[in-house]
Length: 193
Image (cartoon, rainbow, N blue to C red; front, top):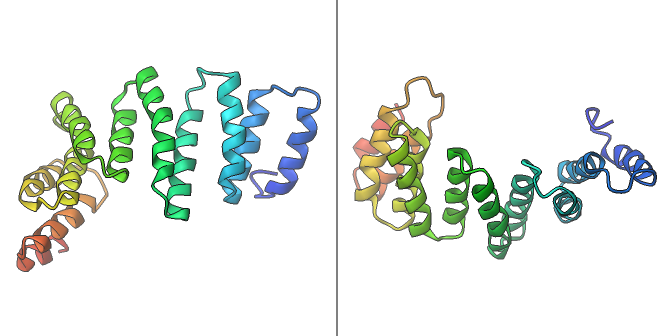
């Protein structure tokens, strides 16, 4: 039913199954996922938090909770939701300190306008992995957000240089924005070519 996007019916069946196994993490997660796909983020949060309560070591649920809070922040135009997401992200990074999760935490800080904290994470990732296209790009985005395009430019250039087989225009688009902020429209236009 989930694959057929019949979320209400899927939820109904999952709720029936819960009457037999009320603490089944898999069922609770799927109910939360259905609500997420329906765009009912607050309802999804309640199920995902229950999953976390029952299985504190669940690797994926914290990131879903963070994503739900981020979506609520954008939908309701309320940055307070980013602050609600932060403890879950911090816990995720503490348990799983891989580059991916630290990068996501940096992006959360960027959304929270905590540019120095975001920048510190991205710089740490660059130090550990000098080939990280997205760490350079995200560090540059921090500087753009701080209205310091001259500091962002070399970072976006490095990200574009490292692109190799990546198929994302992100560093080039950000470099163009950087040049526009610096008043260099000719260089900005060249980034789109």
